Length: 64
Image (cartoon, rainbow, N blue to C red; front, side):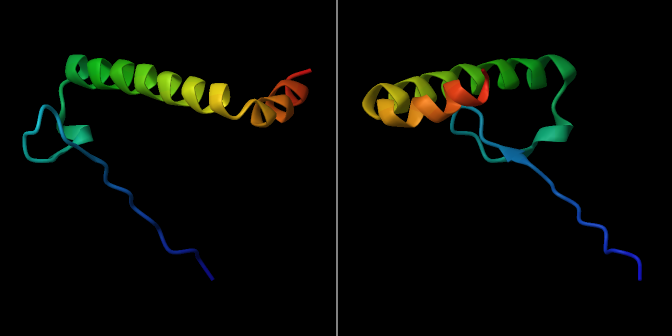
């Protein structure tokens, strides 16, 4: 039996505007959003690991 196809549509809110489909953005705007998301993820992960250093050990061991 063939598996059902699952489609995922991502939306993004930019500057408080209504949500728009991520795939409808221009290549430049998408690149700006991805860069901003990477910065935010980095800050969030850094803050979390600073407050929970015991969580960092398994990550460091996995990369050894």
